[in-house]
Length: 163
Image 1 (tube, rainbow, N blue to C red):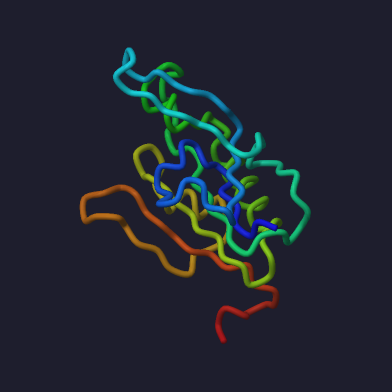
Image 2 (cartoon, one colour):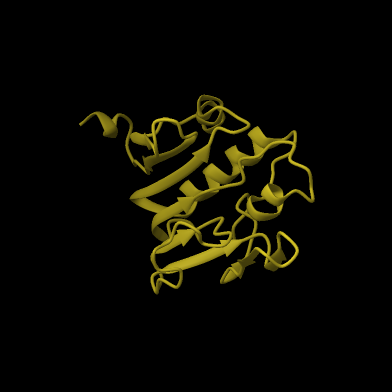
């Protein structure tokens, strides 16, 4: 049984082992993209096709969930960035909240959710507000980078995070 879920794997860019045996790689699309007249290709090949807003897994399936959803709002449909990373529409807040809730649903009690976000279009404070849940901790990748990694934990009792 695989104990890790990557809910929006895309091309598995940040994975050291892109075929890790304990990971289910999921995405809403499966495609090979020609991003620059054959000079750049991008392979999106999830194990399963699935929308992060409504996943087919039973409750409390995974010990670790990675959630790296699209972060661009209003990107041109045929732009390099939209093709490679996907894009959000005007319902971004509800979509991200639904995805966060689904990730927490499929996470086992005391499991960890790793969330990656880039503030190119939307501030992380707006995303956390949409989630309605604060991360335990996080880190910007570089001083000038807009990419932030955060960790959440599925707690099972009120105030459990204060003990």
